[in-house]
Image 1 (spheres, rainbow, N blue to C red):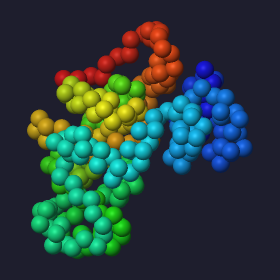
Image 2: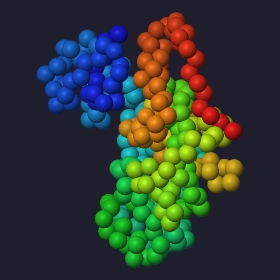
Image 3: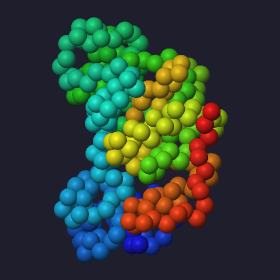
Length: 270
């Protein structure tokens, strides 16, 4: 198959792939239209690739649209699995502070709607923190604080979680992101969390993402999912991500997909 990519790093190792600089999308239109798949386009490209040029894109259009920011993904999760989402308020910045305080006790969490790797996430401990956050953001994204010191990152490719691990926050920090100093723990993760992520992803049409899930007791809560997630743990664990991507697009491309040469190992689960 012929592949086009706009992200050479995420497509590294995929055979028969041609890299095109994103700004050359119109100049290279004929080459793109001849390709079987377009891999990892930028968000501004996906509508014209999918709706106008009718290209197969990976990740899927659903993945891009629902994963575009925290508002889109949260509303999707609220609609499909509200019992697995921390209590969340999305509101304009001119919302009355008293309305917010009727719904939250200190501390709670405030996030920027388009940020990742733990950036733009704030612990709101008092009214001054809240007013400062409201003054910097046009859209308020407020969420109850969960009493945890770790969460789970689950990497999904196609229809399956292919890798899962714990992220443990530094002492005194409420962020577990590896980019924010969190550590990686490859201990088994609960099987029910893997099944939950696969069910949600299947129903929402998401086929490539890093899902972040917190456990409060035995109950899982989604924080978010990221399309362009970090790969430090993937590299450390030598997860064959390219193989999983190729298996999936080959399966999508064929009415009678061949069996994979070797079974993909399941993520460790308790």
